[in-house]
Length: 69
Image (tube, rainbow, N blue to C red; front, side, top):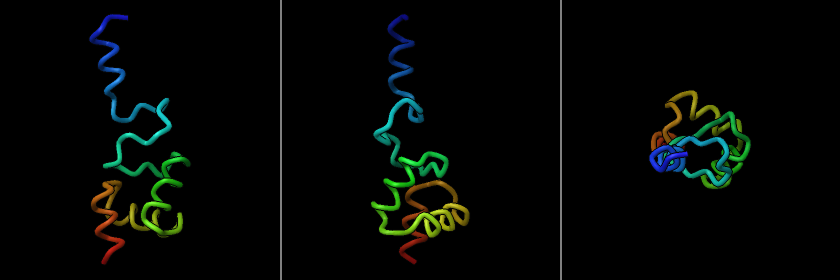
């Protein structure tokens, strides 16, 4: 592999091989580890999180704002 490909692969924001949830600006309801992270961070149930994501999209900032309302 050349250096630019490795940098590109390392910097991908949605690299599914990463399990530490690096892109905290988005909520992926299809990844169980992300759902667990966000329900704990936001203090809500999976259903409450899903309803907020369905209403405002997967932006973490928008979901936080929705849940605070």
